[in-house]
Length: 177
Image (cartoon, rainbow, N blue to C red; front, side, top):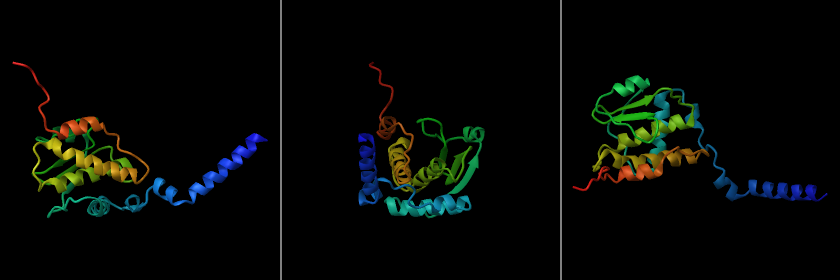
């Protein structure tokens, strides 16, 4: 008897919460599924650019970046590009040619994969700003990527301590003389 009444009370509270404004804010699962309906990479890129326009102060570059999906071996052979050291590299941005490389396997309908494109688009927008080191660009890119994922009920798999340390541009190897 007590079990049934507790369950009824729990169900009533859950139903009340589900209809509340607090639930609408905390359960924001994929508020804009348009990204998932993008028919190609160009359309997905435009959707991500619009999101960045609305959620960051980074301006779109004058020229749209070239976007290529490449194999891991091709990405490893690209000279002069350093990927993030926070796990497996999923994307790269080459500022000299304004090219974004998305590393296979990559699926535009997968939220985590799509967020890699968003991360690299942030780097394309950062080109006009001065940074003390390449790592200084990473924190903003990861934070925007995480914000986009959190709007969809997900989060970026990021080592935030490593990102903040890398953004500090400090020497890593200190030895007393």
